[in-house]
Length: 204
Image (cartoon, rainbow, N blue to C red; front, side, top):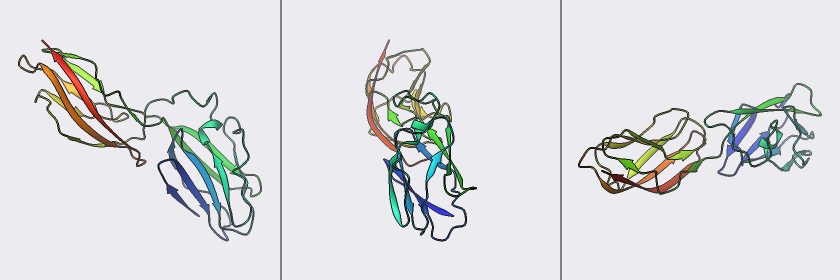
């Protein structure tokens, strides 16, 4: 019934011409991303959120053959104040309907924003098990690439928890002390990407 186009900062939802019902596929985005409705039909389309509270703007109501203003769907979530991080790796669901077309409905699954952890990782100690998450938030599953690494063989970048991004994990050996660096490029299932150069210090 519709097309969805994903960009780094917004999602465009298209109501196709002549659609009897514009029920959209489930949409996945992160909490800061915006939604635009593009209406290719000659009938107006007035989406409204039916979960939690209504966002404090009505700019997403769109007339015939027009494009709406933007709305941040996360603002429709119960208790969301615009700054609280959403649960790691879990979707918070916002449902929407149309004020003018009974039967139209859609679901937006909203995840925490995707960020890199700080470049300086917590210190590690020789002979002690170590694990440090490298990213925050994002839409599972995650893919990543490590480059320019000086890490010892005892420390590796791996997915420890499939609901989270990669982590640096391992147990440094007695000869694996010093300062180590590596570059990480990580992408989540929604196409959001983070890059970061990390440093970890291993002490005896």
